Amino acid sequence: MNDFETQVQEFRKQYDRVYREIGKVIVGHAEIVHGVLTCLFAGGHALLEGVPGLGKTLLVRTLSQVLDLHFSRVQFTPDLMPSDIMGTNIINETPDGQRVFSFQKGPLFAQIVLADEINRATPKTQSALLEAMQEHSVTVGGTIHRLEEPFFVMATQNPIEQEGTYPLPEAQLDRFFFKLVVEYSTREELSTIIDRTTKGEWEQPEKVMDGAEIRKWQALVRKVFVAPQVQDYAIRLILATHPQGPFASNVTNRFLRFGSSPRGAQAIVLASKIRAMLDGRFNVSFDDVRKVYAPAMRHRILLNFEAQAENIAPDTVLNEILADVKEKAPDADKVLK
Image 1 (cartoon, helix red, strand yellow):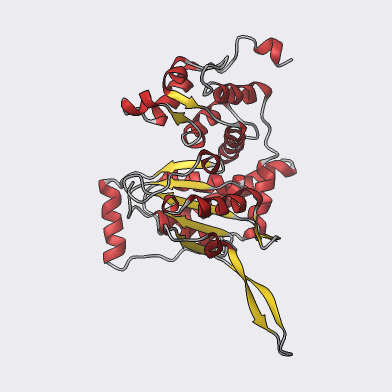
Image 2 (cartoon, helix red, strand yellow):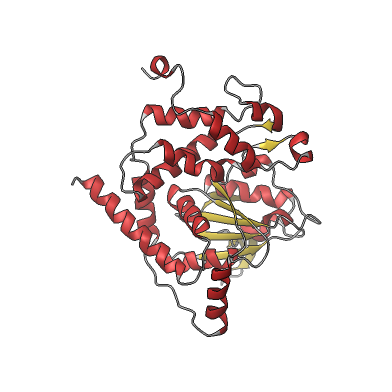
């Protein structure tokens, strides 16, 4: 077994430990937990959508405990200003009586940031978060301040409270690696939740890894091999979301206004690499690509009026695209030489 294979096995062990520790607090929602961890180890950010009270805030707080990272929570409201999250320059008086500006850091200066109800903030404040997510830095008073690595934003939004909300623009949605939809708990899960919260059976999670180890695994993910034909499959799945494009499927031309940017392809390939590693493989399969397609793409496609009128969900369109796009393109032998 070579060094890379040894590292992959170690990553699987550590990932399983993190997942088990989170499971001491979070009941069920396995796909959500896996999705959030995938975003973290891919170096991306996660957007969670679901009704209140399903454990979204508890999940990210538990994650910060297990990973021994500095955690910060920002409750987004319509009156929240960019300086409230980034920080601001304040005047301090030195011992010799001089007045100087010093930078007071805002809640963005953490390693895991929970942006709660992000769609309640104004576009001005949302755009301030955009720079932090993309550049891992904030600019205040013409000075760039770097954020501590690893830097991970997990934002939540409520799908049912439309009053007083500002929908996220496509440019900001594109910065999120995955969009994860949090569903209601099952009968068995609710029973476990009630036992834990009303009988004092709550367990405290243990710390498993720190920031330095997370950065090591993020670098390892990028070393996983992707065969040309698998990469081409992911590319054609992206191109299939472009209306009137050469690879567009019928459902795309009928129900979509806009398709995915290249970030969608990057997210699919990185997430597929993590799935391959967790399965003990050192190369990405077609099935890996299919499994991560929906969470990587559901926020990157824009439905047209006809789709909204017929109450068509983004996942419905994506599933039809998956069914239409073949693993091997007709011109693969010529293109992939």
